[in-house]
Image 1 (tube, helix red, strand yellow):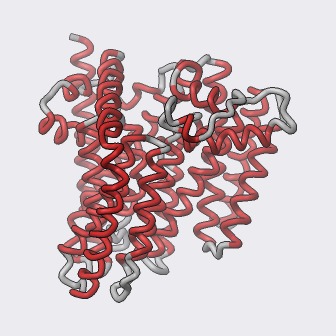
Image 2 (image 1 turned 60 degrees about the vertical axis):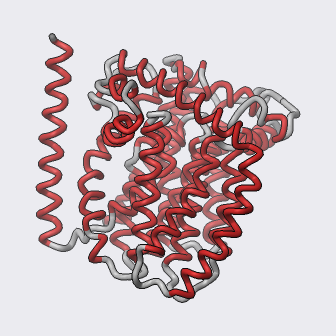
Length: 462
C-alpha cells in the first residue's frame, strides 16, 4: 500500500469519526448529508476552476479534519454543556443566523460585528429549513468547515506561486494547516474567524501574485482587492477593516526595500497606491470614530478575558496585559506564540475552545524555529521572491504586534496564519546544514518549554 493510499484511508476513517460524533450528538443523519454536499460542491468548484491536485487535495483533507473538530465541538456543546458555545459569541451568532431575523446587513451592523458572516450562515439555515424542522448549529458549523478548507486551499495555491513546482513545500504547508489547532477552532465553533482567516489568505494570495511577477504593472488587482477587502472586513470584524490597507503598506515597503524591483514598477505601484489610499481615506474617515471605538472596546474586553484566563491557571498573560504599551507589544507578541502556559491548560477544561488552543501551541513549538530560520534566510533569497517574503514577514510581524497591543487574544492570530506558514516553509529541509540548525533550535525550544513549565509548576506549589 502506497503512502497516498494510506493517507486516503486515514481521511476516510476520520470522516467516519467526525460524522459518527455529529450523528450521535444530534440524533440525525443530516449533519453528514450537509457535510457531503458542501465538500462535494467545494471540490467541484475548485476542480472546475483549474485548481491543482495539491489545492483540491488540501481542500478535501482540511474539510475532513475540520469536520472531526466540529464533531468534537458538538460533543462539548451538547453533552458537556460547553459555556463558550452555549453562552457567548458562538451562541449569539447562532441565534442571529437561525432565528428568522429579517434584518439586512445594514441592520445587522448595529447589533453585531459579524454581520457578513451572519448573512452567509442565514442563507445556509434557510436552505436547511427545507428538511429540518428546527435549526441546529451543525449547519452553520459545516459552513465554517467549508470556509476554512477553502482558506487552506488558497494557502497551498500561494505556496505554488512562491515555490513553483515544489511539491515538498506545498505538502508541508498543507500539513501545517491540517495540524493547526486554531483552524480546528475556526472550523468547529460557530464563530466568524473562519471568514477572516480565508479573507486574509485571499488577500495574501493576490498580493503574492503581483509581487512575484517582476515585469507586471497590473497593480490594480491587489489595490482593488484592498478596497473591496476593507469593506468586507468591516462586516466581519470592525477593527479588522484596517488590515487590507496595512497589507498594502507592507507591500509598498517590501517593494521599496527590494533592489531588484524596477523604477517603472515602483512608480506604477506608488501612483496607483496613492489613488487607493485616497479612496480608502474617503471610506475610513467618516467611520474613523466608530473604528477607533471598536478597537478600544475590543482591547478592553479581550484584556479582561485574558486576565480572567490567567486567573484560571495560565501563566503570564495577566501580568503582560497590565504593562505599558511598548512592553506589552514586545512581550505580548512572544507570549501569543507560546500561549497557553501550561500547554495542557485546555486539555482539562470544559470548553472545546480551550482544548483547540492547547493543541495549537504544540504545533507552534515546532513552527517557531522554522520561522526563525526562514526569516534569517531572507538576505539570500533572490528577487522577486525576496520582495514577497519581505511582504509576508512585515505583514505578520505587524499584525502580531497589533494583536499584542490590543486584544492579546491568541485566536485573532489565527487570521494571519498563512504568512506565518509561508515563512515556516522557507528553509530547505533537504539541506544538511539547515537541518542541523533546525535540530539545534528545536532542542533549545524543547529545553525552554520544559524550563518554563517547571517554573509554572513551582509557582503553583509555592
